Amino acid sequence: MIIGITGSIGSGKSTVAKIFSKYRYNRIDADEISHQLMNKDSETYDKIVLEFGSEILDKDKNIVRPKLGDLVFNDIKKLKKLNKIMHPLILKEIKNKIIHIQKRFQDKTKIVIDTPLLLETKTKNLVDKVVVIKANKNKIIKRNKKFSKKQIERILKNQMPLDEKIKYADFVIENNQDLNHLEIQVKNIIKAIEKIK
Image 1: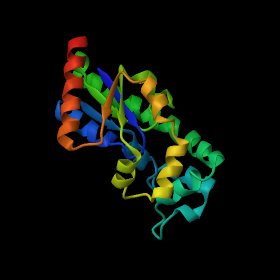
Image 2: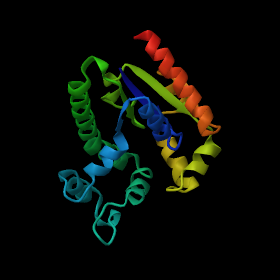
Image 3: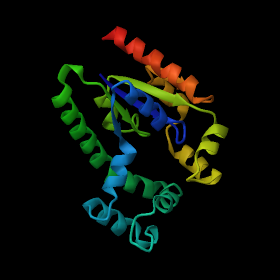
Image 4: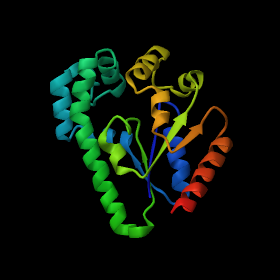
């Protein structure tokens, strides 16, 4: 069983994925893969720096993701260029991880993929069930310490609208309350999935 988790920025995707992993789901984090791909020793790093310039780097020549984010979320053409570089590589790495986990667990395979662009990319073809996390804008802004309110609003504007994401959902999780409320919803989804199998 492969579950894809998605939602708007700061909706709590990673928290939900971590709860699933407590129930023996192997977690694949697209954001973590993206971080690794941007490491200085990768080919992707060179492509990104060549495309977007040295102003996205810190004094140690590391890519500063908020700087890169500022650049691309202000310019749809630049965002498309970044996606063209990153998406195929992230997808390839997700597939590799799935194959590795399936070899190990075979028919007992349980995977949760945490990715903001599950529905916008071919990643959706890899999952059996889609879980969409829903959170109100105030909560999203409050939870995101890395970005300013303005940046979050720009990112939200460039993401698929939540209402559209919900149309693809097998399950919707509402994340406007506490962790306990979140865990109860995840447990209910796991129970429902166990019945389907």
